[in-house]
Image (cartoon, rainbow, N blue to C red; front, side, top):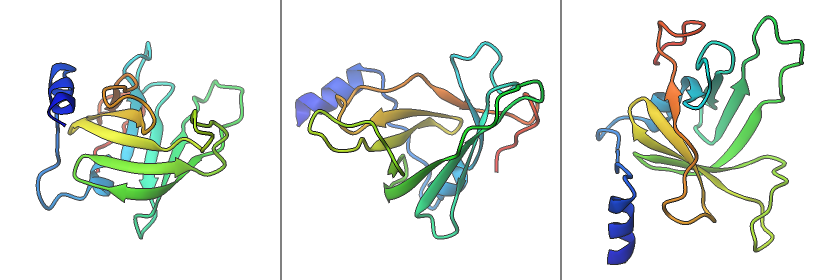
Length: 146
C-alpha cells in the first residue's frame, strides 16, 4: 500500500479534491476539450451533463458549423460511484473489453478545478489520458463554468 501511494506521488498526480460540500456533478458539468487539440474549445469541445438523479452522465461532442459530418451519438455512462475527486461509470454499449473479457469501466479524475483526465480501472494506478481542460467564457463558443 505504501508503494502505491509513493508511486502516485512520484507520478505527479495532484490528489486534487473538491472542497467539502461541493457537488462533483455540478463542478464537472459544462464544456471541455482535450489539451492536445490545436485549437481547443473552438472546433472540438464536448459538453458533459448529468441526469437529475446523478446516476447518468452524458457527453455530447460538438461539431463546427463547417463540419460536414453528422454529430456523433452521445456517450452515455451509467455511473457506479462518485467522490470529491472521481466519477466512475461504464459507457452503455461499450465494445472494448479488458484483458479479463469484461467491458471497460472509466473514471473521470479531477486534477484541478478546470482539468480532468480519464483513467480505465484496469490500467495501472498511474495510467491516465492527456488532460481535458474546461472551456472558459472567452474560448471558442463561449462555454461557461456552471
